[in-house]
Length: 210
Image (cartoon, rainbow, N blue to C red; front, top):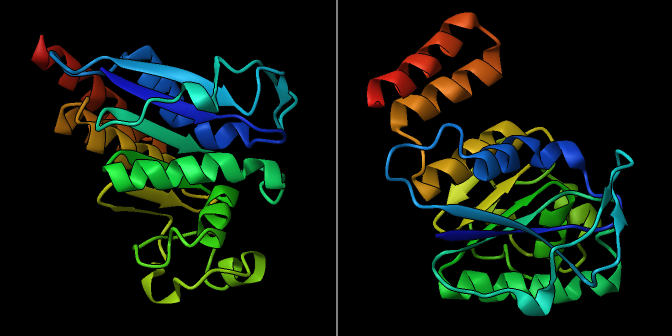
């Protein structure tokens, strides 16, 4: 059983999480025998937070409730509030995840928080374009490891730009090994192109496994 902790904070970018949390929580395309996945929202406290889209989210747990092991995953969404000092606690926890070999998946503004803490200095990563991290993260020293792609997966770290949510989701699902490869390929092709042939390939991949 994987436990996926989704950090929720004021102004979080709802759409950046949509693809990955929907699939991890629903399990609708999981392969036969895939490990279970428990998705939990985690906050600084149990107080409700308001997303950028105006949705109210009540965290399931707080940071002290997080268990760090090889079956733990931390999702860090973009938000306009990452520069608040109160989020340093979850970034410290992200460092624990990385040291323990657990997955950390950060997108958009969350990559800036990791960069400012030095967690991207020696790891291939991406963000919102070359120069962005230098602009918003004064302590960033990882320029030599920056990769100009929508999403970059390197060992147990997956980072993405604000436009990389779909690829980010694909890479997370792939690392968790919960879809058949042909299911994942068809899923990604359909949502990235909208072409009906990929939808039918997705459905066929599920039927073939039964």
